[in-house]
Image (cartoon, rainbow, N blue to C red; front, side, top):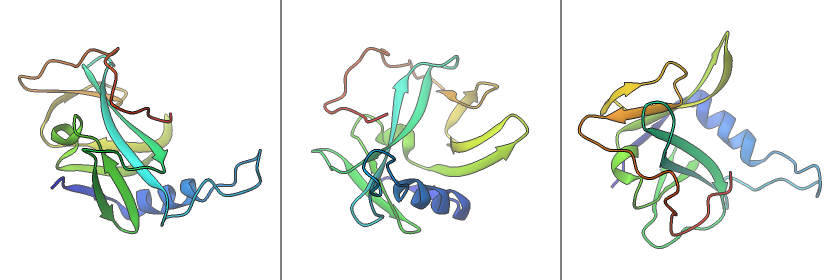
Length: 136
């Protein structure tokens, strides 16, 4: 089972993002009960890998669901080993604010904090397709 920690601030921000009103429909994007936060890893960035997050309403074969602080996360099969042991936080700094995913198993991160590398790991091909589409 994937271990994923979420800070209290990140959980609140994620719940707010899920319930944000779509300007086109005037309806919320979802509810914490029917909407998941998909956490995934893809090749790219200056350090080799990048974390990503997106709203999702479906669980696919091979996905693992992790619930933490009232937020449901989905992690796909390929991303499990990279996400396991990670922490999702919401950070605010002089250079901006946003969600940050950190994992103590990562060897290095780039200065912008958007990409990482792991000891002995090669980055997956950035053009590699997942078994499903991410809604970024």
